[in-house]
Length: 522
Ligand SMILES: Cc1cc2nc3c(=O)[nH]c(=O)nc-3n(C[C@H](O)[C@H](O)[C@H](O)COP(=O)(O)OP(=O)(O)OC[C@H]3O[C@@H](n4cnc5c(N)ncnc54)[C@H](O)[C@@H]3O)c2cc1C
Image (cartoon, rainbow, N blue to C red; front, top):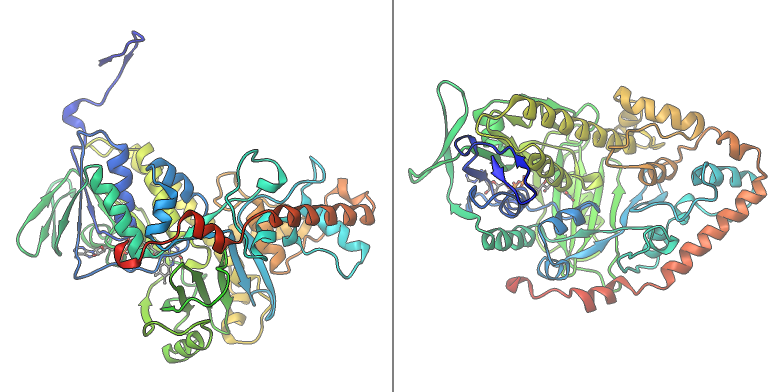
């Protein structure tokens, strides 16, 4: 028991039961995020160590993020401008999807809430749908009712400030960064907070004969690194969770058939830097464009059952906006996840725990949210079963929610121009997604849990962006005059545009706030 000034006695975990050492295996984004967060948050009596192999390297393609990463940055006390400058970072207001509903369509999944509501009870998408009945040809698109979209269409950016609820501030941002520089930046921070790094290749994993707990990893040169608790961040190899502990993999490729990506950097085009990612659908799969300060990151995600690698490479290279700076690199993957991501004294983060393709830039977020959960449920050396169970249940829910959101993009396409799109349109989707689509189609109701990573602003942008309209509007809006709804909707669009026009150009904002130091100095 510890005695506090208030005179209260608070129970504490007895010293002999506490975790004394955590070993992070792997030094990609997930490894260094883990080391940074744990070295920041845990008691100084718990040592945090990390092992990585320069010879193996990192996957190095996770370059687009989503807004909750701001919370990670605040937690680890990251200086935003310094982090952006040392990772060639740019800001991200959303993802612009091309050719997803039909070839030629474009919509932005923007970050933030709809500009403002017309009415406290009836959500704006109902009013918007009603206003369409007024029948004007230049009626605003739904996406025009978000400040983030108004800023993105003019390549403007400035972080939103208080008051949060005022229309000009109803947006938020994430980041694009160079994945190698990101890991290097976090490494400096983690090491400055006491994390210790070991270099070398892990060749074996030792387990306790009785409990099956991992006791040590063995290095190529014979060193043994022991710990009480292991964080497996070894990438697709999944050395501890998949390898030593043999946790089964749940394959989700029937819902997301993509299993390959070709990645290539290209020269940054002249002109303004876009404050958003692009996701351009092709006859098979899609291509990302991620604008950085010094280059553009590109990649083509495709399904080997529907396209050869050479066809995919041709598609990718034909759709670059600048000269390729390298030859395309092939990455193979299977969509899905390990059934449990915390087993015995091993928790897996990042690619070693599973992978959902990068359409909504969610993998780095999963690392963050899993780390937050791990801190909430931080164990004793006994690895309390109730903590593991709750952690695994919540993690699984998060993954299946996001899986459904990603599957919706493919399944709700109207494209009929290739075998790939015919497959995704007609494939059987999880019941949880069927339910969401049915209620949306019936009455514009979004029936998701409050804990879903993507809320109404995101779902409504994607559903309407892919031409899935509510089949009817809310009863309270239904009795109103469509001309009234249309006039109110136009006002909101004008207010969003006025708010965006006050922002500087994204390029100028970067120049004054976080201009990159040369990459070799980063
Ligand atoms: C095509 C593609 C695109 C992606 N795009 C995005 C995106 O836009 N946004 C996003 O959030 N996420 C994205 N991701 C996911 C993102 O890249 C990963 O989530 C993130 O980089 C974390 O990777 P990692 O650290 O788990 O693995 P890795 O980067 O592969 O790191 C693995 C580490 O383990 C070490 N290691 C492995 N084996 C050994 C061994 N035997 N001994 C010692 N060390 C070892 C390696 O050296 C390395 O340090 C993408 C992934 C892919 C495949």
